Length: 65
Image 1 (tube, rainbow, N blue to C red):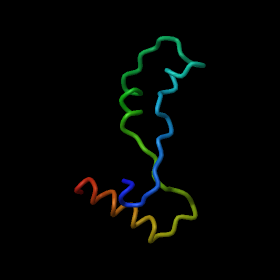
Image 2: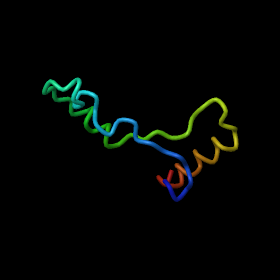
Image 3: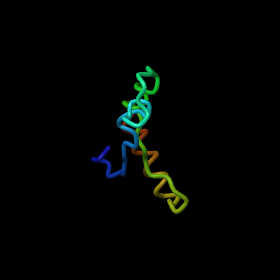
């Protein structure tokens, strides 16, 4: 998505249950999967309509929707 100049971030590259402070050997396959698939995109109250439209349009184009 960097080519589209849309800011993005990965908030939890390691699921919480695998972080050292919480680690107890618990297996949570859905959490593992989601951590590899979810990114954060711009969303905040000050985002103008044109900016929201631009983000949505570029994401839809990227995924061919």
